Length: 80
Length: 529
Image 1 (cartoon, chains in turn yellow, blue):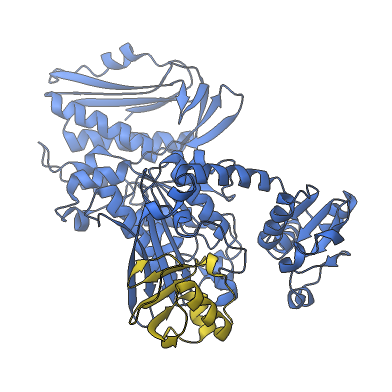
Image 2 (cartoon, chains in turn green, orange):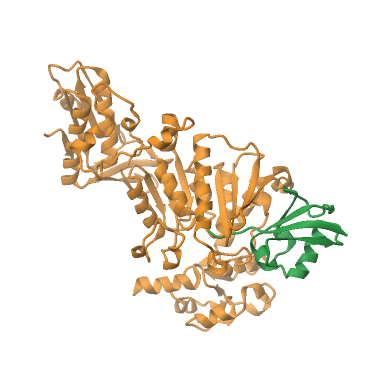
């Protein structure tokens, strides 16, 4: 298991009901992690509609997860 | 008196110059304004001036008297033409005689700047193409506002207080920002010469427009096709309750004129589209994207890249905001470098659907104005490019550096990606049709398909027969549409437009979207009624 810190923005924050959480995951990549969270929280957005950043840098979805990573999922927003 | 005149026939410079001869004058200088053969890149073959003559003469006399008092010149006069003029004709003549040249030059400059700014004169340009445009003859940069001192002890604003009514001769005082070492007179002149386009005069646009106007940005373009609604006021605080129902672009222009009359405003009361966005961006030095419309945001990013015009993007969601500056230079990231495809309407959230607290767009719109001023003034900025995320509840700020090499570069580069997107958007815009009523659309042979959700339809049913297929299902149920021309309808035209473009991309060329949706029909009824 890998322990990661998650931060959610915009719709994801609303759908998760919190702006962040710490989770233990069996997923090995960011994509796998997102799919796991999507199933749990009912996220409406596909991974391809999001950007993901790890430790304050944008990242590829296939990046392997490491213990202690801070992962941020960012959807585009349009309000004004 | 009689230092100013409106002329309906050719101006005679020699006669005017002769009239300025005075025994104490050591010289004189004149400025002639001529009709040129183009305006903002369009060939012009002539123009016509119209004036509110009584007011123009009274104000013109005041301006020349101010110049004489302010600079202590021997004499000065000015004549402005009205009527039809051809290329090369003298449109305005200004002359001043004085003991020394400096006062003569300054008085001349003062008179022409103030004439351009204060006189109720309009010109109609006749373009070679046969079109014509009325242009208010307003000017922004006034040299005398940038004078520190001059020979006759007439301090800045001095003459205004004595000779002119307060409103038309208001002289902006930028001293608080001039005092900043990085701004100064040189920076202020840059702002006065700058042309900034603000797309969207809503929650983000309202503060952005205010601060840019206050700072003395010379020309502000304001794009907004919407009318003010009461639900806008909690976050769009430049407007008044009495303004509800008015066109926001025009209301915002009025607000700018109240805040800083030195700013020239160009209003656009129709949203930009793929057919004119690149050209419009090219007429400005910088653009702020302040709409709540994902399609507009992507169009703006594409137009910025293709026109090389820097763009400041911001958007909000409930208590959060995002900010990105698109430099629009090769090797710098655009919006599509982050999220390559525009998400379907509804996915990205809107203030109407998700809710928003007024200060959230207030903060982000203010940051857009800040970024704009930094760019225009050449203030220090980070070397790299980033997406900024703000959470105003927990004060969380994330600055995520963007690497252009990981974005559009993988798909042919920003310019190529933008070019393809604009071409596709132009094809898609052919799908938008405007009708005054649904009955008109039925009479024209269109079958109606309401793509709104069931609860929206219950709240506001259409007044014409329509099938119901929610927007999310349209693509999967395309087979049900038949061969007849189909008009998709939703609340605003966004979901129906998106669905129509999806279906057209699949070869269903007979599918259209009601431009502006049900809201446009409602507006049409109100205007008609």
